[in-house]
Image 1 (cartoon, helix red, strand yellow):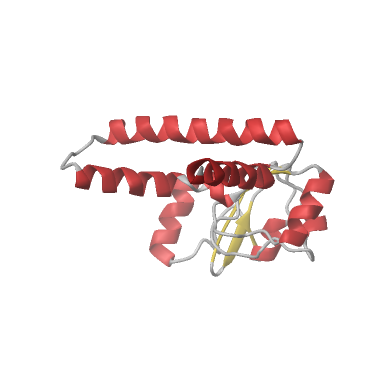
Image 2 (image 1 turned 120 degrees about the vertical axis):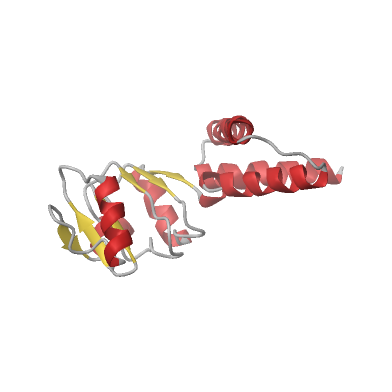
Amino acid sequence: MAVSDSKGGIYNPEGLDIKTVQSQKKQTKSVKGFSGAKDITNEELLELPVDILVPAALENVLTGENAEKIKAKLIVEMANGPTTPEADEIFAKKGIVLIPDILANSGGVCTSYFEWYQNMHQESWSRDQVLEKLDKQMVQAFSDVLEIKNKFNTTFRNAAYILAAQRIISAMK
């Protein structure tokens, strides 16, 4: 329904043809002015009536000041630190599910580890092998965090922190 870049965003409640948006972005260096969509600010994009919001560029864009205006039912943090602690609390009170950056965008870290591992062992995995291993890692990570979330009746972010602390304690022992 909406996408943005550093120059602003576009919105069409009927949806966007992403391939055509990408083509325009490549040609004009901006998504703004896309035919069939309304130009909006990046701030307006955050407050649209959407099911899923994916902040994927800047930190601290979801704040105590705009959190009450967020209408998404699910937020998936693909940027590093897009949500302030104040906004996190508001989202939890509003019942908005938030998948934190440390879980949502950890696939890149896993893939970097796979690359390091291959280099250290003079191996070369196919794209399919990497994706298969990544899928297994990410599904397990999500399952582990979800288990902690349910056990302690907390948010996904707190569950990820609890799990990380448990693993550090276990490793230290």
